[in-house]
Amino acid sequence: MDNKEEYGKKKSKKKIIVIFGIIGMILLAGGGILSYLTSKTFVATTVVKNLTENAIKVMAQREETGLEDNYKTVSNVKINIQSDYYQSLATIDPTYATIANLFRNLSNTDSNITTVQDKENKKLFVSLNTTLQTQPLMNMKYLVEDATEYYYIDGVSSTYINNGNNNYFESLNSTTTTNENITYIIEKIGESVSNNLKDEYLSESYEKDYKKITITLTESDLAELINNVLDDLKKDSKANQIMTGYNQDFAKQKVSKEQLTGLGTLQLHIYTNKIYGAIERYELEIGEDTAFAYYKEADKNILELIESGKVSARLEIATQGEKTDVSIKDGNGNVLGTISVSTTSTNQDIIMNITEEDTSLDITYNKKITNLQKGKSYDSTTTMSMKIASSNTTLIDGTITVTSTTTNDTTISEDVSNSVLASTMTGTEQELLNQKLTTVFTQLMS
Image (cartoon, rainbow, N blue to C red; front, side, top):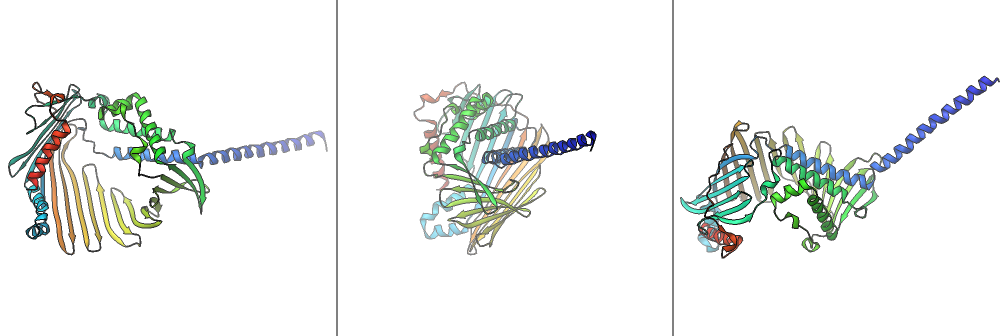
């Protein structure tokens, strides 16, 4: 064998060694990547990310009319509730008279609600005017102007009451919208939860064909996690500005363990495929006896309520296009009812029918937008009907209808020059409101 042939063989062997070496490194790297992709930390943070993205998708499905932040909406609310059952009982037992009177009086109310938001000039106005058989029942106004909050309750005060600073419009400016702000907060909460999931919260085990990642939060852990999220929102200037706009005391917000006492330990179990790590099932345990499970089965999403280790209720959710159908079953697979949801950009229908033993509940909801001129105006009608029957007797049969017109007219003409400071009032805002509400409820149940 000459030197040239020997050299060729050695070179060929080196190539084979190099190739196997490269393949080995790829396998090792791939194994490391796969190990990371199925690690408890990666799976837990992926779940948080998915929940965040789904929440943002829900926000994106909201109606876009061009009048989300600068608008005037005038609404009329009518209620029609009938209950021959309680009316009959009232003639026999006077204790049922208040319920019968409430249904009858609500059906004789007429409410007008006006809401105006002027983001550019940082003004917000809400008024409620309700009559009972054409007689005044409730007249309230709420106003935010010049970063100051005012309210007026007819029968309690004769002028607007100055309730101090209000930071609502700090969360809005000419370049942001309410939807964008909410989306930003959702994103920041998701990031913060992921960053604050301590290793000590996480554990992993194996169960049948699954690798199970568990996030365990005691009441103390949950309080700590919530407070860490709140701190992150406070440190982020934009998030802090948005949250302060909704709650001027946001900087002081904190959750104590005592506030969560009784909740028990929360455990979120994430079941992943042993081989390739895909998430196939979730289980949320609340305390010792209650859990919720979520997973896919064929073309359906399944949500189960588990009590004392047994399935007590099951929802089978099937979505096709703009329609979602839900079948409600008991632990034995018996159908208890159905829910149907159909949604488009200008219409939403929800139909619910539930039956258990001799009692049935039927609810229908419809919201329709018409005459839409984007950025200028639109009309809307919302109708919700409910019927409850038992033993072939109708207990309640009622409808609430809200008709509204929304325009880009943001004119607010309210005079607060004679307003009085809340600190000079003899009672707090809540005491004054409670006093008025007590009077209103007395009228409705008489």
